[in-house]
Image (cartoon, rainbow, N blue to C red; front, top):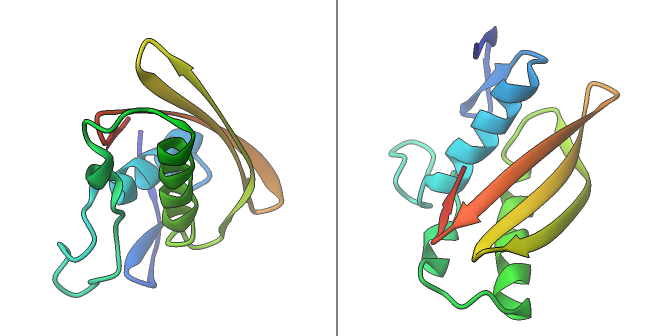
Length: 116
């Protein structure tokens, strides 16, 4: 269940310590095109620009950079490490995030420019 900590800060709600809620916030940022939020034009990512792209080293690094940029929109969360693998044309990321002195592992799948 996704819960909120009850305060509004930096155009985002602060999620509780629930790992699934933090993953859903990251997925939401990645799947929101930059410029589509009326009062937060820098919120989102350019992940959809890589829809139907060939998964080569350059493309994977650019998608990784989009994930790193999205994490910067998350208040109180910082990137500890990120690794990837490719399996059946699916790009799988394992992301370790630091949140309130705790390391949280988030597994993310990117297929055709959509994160889940």
